[in-house]
Amino acid sequence: MLSEIHACFERGDVIPYLGPGVLALAQESELPAAPEQLVTRLTAKATVPHKIRNNLTAAAQYIENFKHRKTVVAAMNEAFAAPTAPTVLHEWLAARKNLKLLVNAWYDDLPQQAFKGRESWGLVQGVSQAEHFGEWVHYFRPDGSVVPGRPHVQDGSGAKAPAEAPAETLGWKTLIYQPIGSVLPKANYIISDSDYVEVLTEIDIQTPIPEAVQAIRKGRNFLFLGCRFATQIERNYARQIMKRSSDRHWAVIEGPLTKNEAKFFAEQNITHIDAPLVDFVAELTGVKAPVDAAALV
Image 1 (spheres, helix red, strand yellow):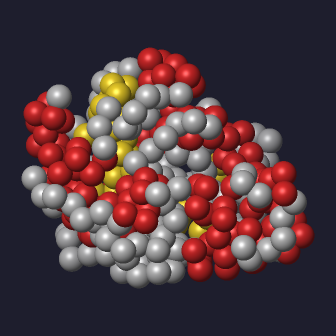
Image 2 (image 1 turned 180 degrees about the horizontal axis):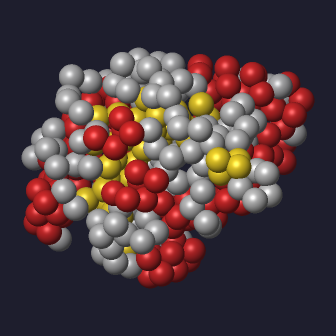
């Protein structure tokens, strides 16, 4: 299976899909490496009812409602502010000559750090309707500058349809896609209940998915690393991002799957690779990755 995955990377047929668990590969990282760790950071900054203190999206919504959106953004910025070097995995992926698309489904900026100094790449970041009404994504150059978007088009109901990708972005060799936002280059976050309601209301018809992502994914295989799919939000995002891709995918998750994960894997034809992420990455890259033991607790 590893030989098959390597061959797919050589052909440019693999789309790595990174989740929060990848941060466990970072050495001495202070970044939250799981939703449970992140919600603890947020609720330490604001009083939240006990029944939702462990629910990331609900806690963020409560803080937004009673403390303002700016409080949520400030807490997120602080949670992901600690300087952290890209992991062995990030560096290895950045060195793949035929990598067309990298999905980072967490709020860190390690992928773009790994790509610094590389040629012909850019970033597309999901944005919140609460801060950018009528817009779903923003495009950025490697230096962090915004790529001006094309005008939005009014549909028959008078609502704004998503803008097409700026022409400049279509020539990029590699696109980093951060569907739920990230701390850099701009602090855009899809984090609260209302953020997800806006996206998930439209995602079945693919409106929030950048057209470049829709084009690149055709016929390609997804490799899920550091992800879990225990919640409906996690499954829905992955399902819609991988729509109309190939019928062959892999996910590295150590240990047994939940009932919902197993059903999702069968539905999407995702092969479960039961192995510790650190071991799989060492085999994939040929480099033993230093691990932050605290992140694995």
